[in-house]
Image (cartoon, rainbow, N blue to C red; front, side, top):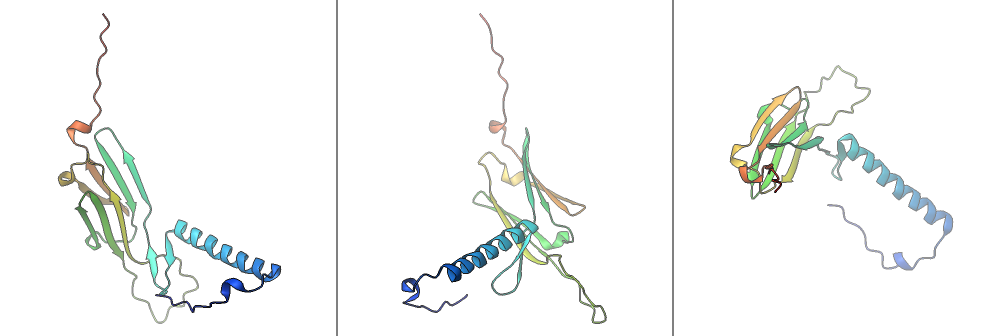
Length: 159
């Protein structure tokens, strides 16, 4: 948690166009950097640790929903999938290999650490029949629809 020193005079100080404009640009730059970090899939939190969120696609098909998460480098034993109160949660961890002392890293961009993604399930999903598969770094979850929620075609009779 970050502590911020209270300054009772902060809001009553004189406005200075150059100083305030520079401060606004700095704040805007930080926000843009955070946005791009989130887009890239990882952000550095206040404690200096990495928060990693895998990209997700959710597709509705005729008989089910398909949820695909990109989790390259994550071992399937490090992934836990739970459903509780119509909330689907996928947790896992991408572990960083042991660092070699004789190696000289020039750049480290891959994200490591724990992740958690949660999604509210439609009431039409049969949560007891969810299936998961893992192939080439993509975790696929198949969420079957209940029979009453599947679309039905009704023929129109002309009289």
